[in-house]
Image (cartoon, rainbow over all chains, first blue to last red; front, side, top):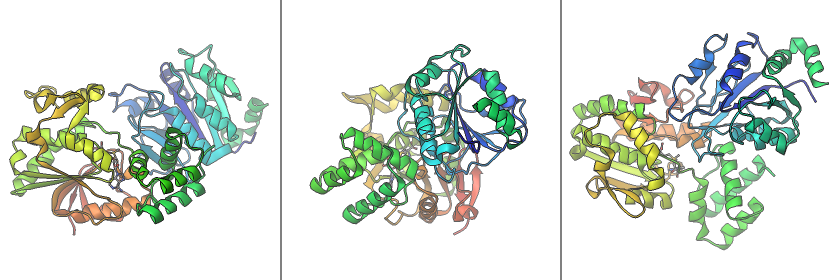
Length: 200
Length: 275
Ligand SMILES: C[S@@+](CC[C@H](N)C(=O)[O-])C[C@H]1O[C@@H](n2cnc3c(N)ncnc32)[C@H](O)[C@@H]1O
């Protein structure tokens, strides 16, 4: 396993809002990677979701435009009703194609595109949720030598999603939501030692 | 296995050489998905097999074209956009032109056009309006001409319509009649529209419009092609004409950005100010 991860992809569905909110609150002001969130939400909850995530954190959660470049130290949220794909240049591509796993945005599509394009630069984290979206995407991340993390199913409000991932692919780290916070903090270059502890 | 970018590029070259359709500047990540889906759909193992099938059966190409494009659409997609068209854009155009000319570029199965017809009807502007709706995909244009919304897609269309116009006197049903396959838009509305096959990438733009809509079409293109198509949109408009793109698209990185004023940033509506 390497330590030069550049992008952290986070998927979540039912029961994931609280732990992800906590994660964003605990982020250091400066982090050396980018974060892209793909969260399921009711179709007509369109506006206000990014804002709700931004409350009380030092970053603004951005809903990117098509062809927007992903920058370091920024947090992006897949817009509702669009799939979000990522290419080699870390450019975002949006698509309105059919829902996958009844979901648009689909976590699988985001994970798969990034795994293909950015290989071992990717960290994938899957939180609580009631369906199987994200499981096959985690498998792709693993196959491309990225790092796979799930929220501990015992702690997840709805464990179906992290459990489905466990059933299709090896998972590098099964962590509580608090541990995920410390892990992301340790990803910042200055704290490599802590990161090593996690990866042992 | 994932299709590599190299394989995809060789394949689009082949399509261009053999059929004259230019997908060479389509955005790779979404195009990769479309191609993988086609391989799965027709139980093919590789792009090589797909190539052979296309060579052997010339009639297969239109099916291929239909599958490689993304046709997903809905009526009143982004209700707040349609509110803006209703309250601002159409009234302004109406006050500055005798005849209102509208182009839907990439109209897919027509839901965006049906929405426009309804909005025009509400404003009493149908009589003075001409609509052209185009798409590259002949198969999907057939659906658009029929004006049918399948019963299984009704729910979210109703939901969008009700968000756009919560206290409408004319409900959505007013504009449609029941048919076997779904709700069919009444002929008196449909006949206001010419549905034409047109390729935005390789053909000259149509011209002399007051409003062009090209929504959720350019997201499937790379930046270079987006810029090229935006130039065409610009060219197709009268001065002071309006351009609408998808609400998650941007003209920021295009050369034409400074030839438009922003009419509504949220809804991505622009007004042509410079030739
Ligand atoms: C996702 S649909 C958009 C439908 C509608 N405008 C909307 O926003 O709901 C995209 C459409 O663009 C069409 N398209 C793709 N490439 C095109 C091209 N080169 N010229 C014209 N239409 C094209 C596709 O066939 C498809 O029907």
